[in-house]
Image (cartoon, rainbow, N blue to C red):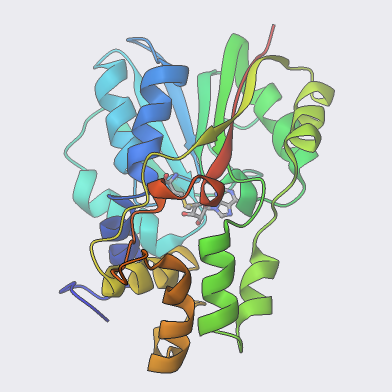
Length: 264
Ligand SMILES: C[S@@+](CC[C@H](N)C(=O)[O-])C[C@H]1O[C@@H](n2cnc3c(N)ncnc32)[C@H](O)[C@@H]1O
């Protein structure tokens, strides 16, 4: 499995997300989320917790961040690697079961690239509304469709698993998401499409590892024959034949949404 010494899916995710989700997550936090010192934040679908740790740094010792994720292994790794941060904790849970659900106690509920994994989104928005303080906000970055470089990877390199992988994604359009948000009682202040700044892979091995780890192991690299790989990569070759695994150069690949809404 490529270039990592630790081959667990969670460790693979942690390593792979550095050049992908983490970059856009930090950008989102800096430009749109803008937490304040003392804020209490829930990071919903925190993965291995890198962005939770970044948020904890920004809210300072007076603030607090709780990262929640249903993936036991990712939460375990987050606890092991980030336990020294005093104002940060991690809990296994989900959008329908998290600490302080319904408590009206959070200043911000943040979520980076996790909403498209969540089912029953109206319930998710209702839960968040009930869990925020008055004046609190939600800050979500999410995919409204499976990006072509992912969809094609499943179809071309894992046809045996493609349907099963795609079924895991619960992508919905921006207008549907906005409607869930408004129906829950939120006032939307920002809802817009954005191009990702991350998702750069140093080599093919890393790209395959990313597909494997982001699908929680459903994408199986052992099914990727040389013929399948070359067919997939053909779309990502420049005119001179060299490979471009910097998906920032392909705007149609990485179109996502950002949503900021307040509980008044
Ligand atoms: C693409 S990862 C993003 C992780 C992290 N936010 C980041 O930016 O690196 C999506 C995460 O959502 C989590 N997830 C899936 N279903 C969820 C649910 N129902 N509630 C909360 N999180 C969920 C997954 O386990 C996964 O770790």
